[in-house]
Image (cartoon, rainbow, N blue to C red; front, side, top):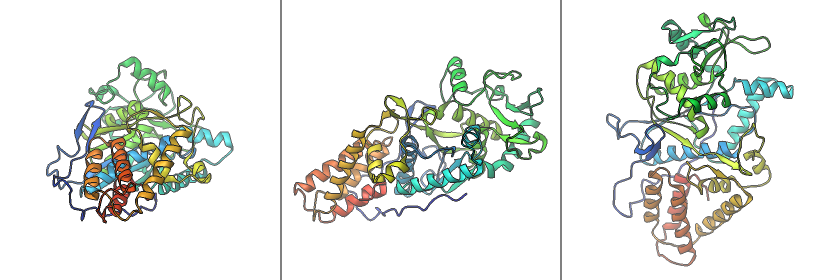
Length: 425
């Protein structure tokens, strides 16, 4: 599957350090360890090793909303910081282009599910380009991954890690007793897991399962639903969690530096996909960092398709809103925080962007190298965008007041904001 056209990234390597200190290492909060840790610290040959990242993408049954945008901006920042530090980045993102919500929306609207998925995926690409998101190295659909998923599931079935229900449906489940560390990522108690499983696509009440929390691996063919050849599994389609596990393993290997997504994916999706991957490879943990972005709310509630309280990126673009203003507005609060989107949020982003653009045109300003150092340090500490943005604000205020004699500084400021924060002035 094709991704989207990448933005051009300014090269900051020629800008001398203002402080003369070494380039900071990116540190990120790991949900599993519940603390901030350096990325790449446990690599063999850490400096030369590529950085790897798997981010869970969209289920394309509706347009990109600001919650999606905030999540994708978060991991775009990770990508940019690594690249600025000189690392090769191997980044994979999936598209869940077959799943129950997609089929339900297509049936509701009298649409062809394939056409719906293609149309919404194309719109997502347009939105990502407008927000200047660096595209993944591999953009992979669930449908194109089914042969690889079937191969991995056959192995789980052969080793009794997977089991088939005896109700004639052909449904296959993952036996959680094969993953004794299950729960290490989310740190949730069983009662909470049961509630979230029911709320987020699981079926804890399904009869015939060995454990109510056992996740679906393969859904046997149903009348009126698309199905694929599953070999020994029988016809059907894959479950959600195994899709991401197999795509990540096939493209990035047994361990990834970052598995990312919104914090609504911590459980069950990331917990289950990690368990699948670890049982398949025998390597733990699946991710060195499980990184999760906060939710964007509207009117006091989480922005979600089920609630219908969505603000779409494409709608804002159609109304003439500059995508760079959206990006600035979404970075004004730390990525891990749940926050509300309001008209004032957007207005503040637009005003901030206008000041930055005006300051980029002045003939001289305070040290551009010092600003670059400061932004690098802020982002290296768990993507502290509020601090990074405030440093740019302070530089702009001083430059507009006529302070500073560095004639290279306005260009360095613009390049810093572009390369590291993804904002084209």
